[in-house]
Every structure is written in structure tokens, then in C-alpha cells.
Image (cartoon, rainbow, N blue to C red):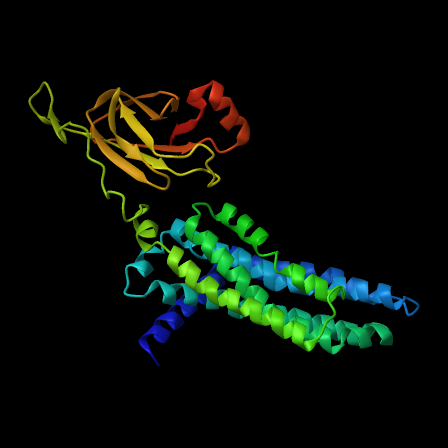
Length: 369
């Protein structure tokens, strides 16, 4: 076995162990499939023998489409959590500082999501088929077990899961908030379902060649998705919170780290930490913000960046600005050795963004944490 395969296997095993300890993952993998099997089973079992063939195809199509929502939605939520969630927990950096390549890391993450997704999806589909065979009318059973329907489910389940996984991981690598990443990942996972829906409702005439052509297209997209996410994957930013072209430190103000009090004893300086991290991961007012302490600029801050500087003990003021747009002036007192934390971000909702045009100090939120 190659070194790369060993590393990928290690990531998969680590992720599966983490899943067992994560209540969110357990709930997602158990409750979501149950929700999506209730409606199609009821739909199938309530079809009467007198239903016309057109109506029968429509109701079966809706039921089978529910089955395809499982491999689309379940992995999207897990994949969107995979990077940003681990980053929030503080367990991402120890993995990224190892010799593992980005492609190996991403493939391990993807396989760890794909394997349980396939197991759950096929198990739920098997339960659906068993309920249909045992309790539905003979005409319904014959229609559900039609070859094209089974082929659609078996073929599209892993391909839809693959699309959702790579979209979710891509969003997770660029997002700073787990909830936003999961919402965006779930929405982005739905477009390929359009093709499956057209086949399920017989809008596109189901055939072996059509299924193979669409499957081949999704397979190519899934393969390109892996490479595209690997290119987007910025290891340096995930570890340090900065892009490689940004300075790793911001020069401190022209103030000594220690001062001498009136008693002649050394006096420790205080530390000011400013983090730029939006609560919802969205900033409408973007760009680099300048940091001003006591009317003097000490540098700038970009999104997902943290800036530290030393302060003399005493009374100070802090303000951020970007051109004519600013934050409100924050006044504070600090003692020697004390650490003050502030969080900032640009306007994140449209009413505030529009109001900042008239009242510029609404453009940037600055709060002590």
C-alpha cells in the first residue's frame, strides 16, 4: 500500500471516529433519512389500483425523488462541517502541519462522508422497496421495480453524493461559520437533482444510454470537483488565519513592552487583540480596515485576520475605518498585563449597509468580547 493511501486511510478512520462522538453528525445521519422515507412510503401505500398510469408515474416519481434527497442533503451538511467545524474545535491545525498533501487530506475527508452516506441511502432505499413489495398493490410494485427506476437510484446515489461532498467541502474551506457553510452547502447540493427529477417524472425518456450519459457527466464533474477544491484549499490561511501574501505579524505601536512607573519599578504593557470575523460569515461592506488607536494608525486588518499590539496601561480609544466609512469610537481603560479582545466585521445585513451611506459609523461593527 502506498504512503498516500495510508494517509488517506488514516484521515478516513479519524473522521469516522469523530462522527461517533459528534451528536450533530449522529442526528443528521439518523433523523434526516427517517424524515425522507416517511413521505414516499405513505405516497406509495396510498396509491389505489384504479389510479391511471400517468398519475401512477407521477406519484412514483415523487416517491423516488425523495430517496435521492438523502444522498444530496446528508453529505452536504457533513461535508460543509468537515473543515470549518474542525477549525472551530481547534483540531484542524495538528493535521495540516503533518506531511499530508492537500489532495490526500481532501480525499480522506470526502471518503469519510461518502461511505456512511452510501450505506444509509441504500439501506433506506432497501426499506422502501421492502415496504412496497409487502404492502402496495401489484401494479404499483411492478412500476416501482421497473429497471429504469432501480438504475436511476443505484447509479445516481453515489454521483449525487459526490457532487454534494465536493461542493460542501469547497464551501467549508472558505467559510468562517459552521451554520452558514451548512446552509450554503445544502442549497448548492440541489441543482443536480433536477436531472434525476426529469427522469423520475418521465419528462426525459429513461433509457440505459441516457442514464449512462448523465452519469458520465456527473462523474467527470465529481472528478474535477476534487481537483478544483484542492486548488482552492489554502493550508496557510486555515492554520494562521492569513493568506500567504499577508504579513504574519503587524508591527506594534511605537511603545515599549515595559514602562517604568513613578515608583521606578517596571510596569507591564497591555495587549490589544482585534479579530475580524463576521457573526454570519457575510460582509457587505468589505475591503481592508485601518486600525486607529488614540488617533494613530497601527496598521490594517483583512477578513479572517487577527491583529495584536501592545498598549501602555491607561485610557485609550479604538476605531476602524475604510475611507469615509468607520466604526464607532470605542473608549476603554486597560491595566498592565491585561488582554483586551475586540471583534469587528463589515455591515452584514442590507438595512445596516444602506444606512451606513448616510451614517458612515454604521459601516463597521466593533465590539469588545
